[in-house]
Length: 174
Image (cartoon, rainbow, N blue to C red; front, side):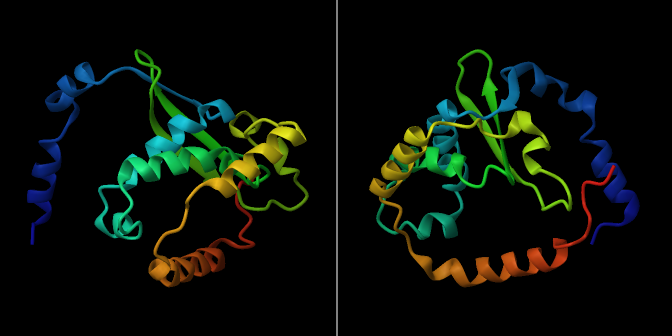
């Protein structure tokens, strides 16, 4: 077990001057709201981010990473259009290549007496026509998104605990 002074010394080794070179080799990127047009890049980014996790990869059984990426691209527009009152989406884009290099989804809690469409509207996927929404739903049905559901139990238990911790707590106060 490290003593407090050892931990402090270790942390001091990781300070800004020591890693300044890292900032000089990283490509510049910008974080911005995710649009429906960004869905292929966001879909690809998510699979590539989770694929190294052996337990996550195992749920896809014999499906290859590239196949799962393709299927995720097919279904992603519907995912981005789902529950737009609560969900906000952002991506990080490499300014040189235009490639999506990061993605995040934020889920807003219910706020009493507040229209969530007015909360952080820039990160809310824009409204689309009924035809576009229907097309996204039809395409999502075509995607092969079957996987091993043996992890569903633990995931559902975590979701229940999260809900019990956050429900009705009055977040996002002024």
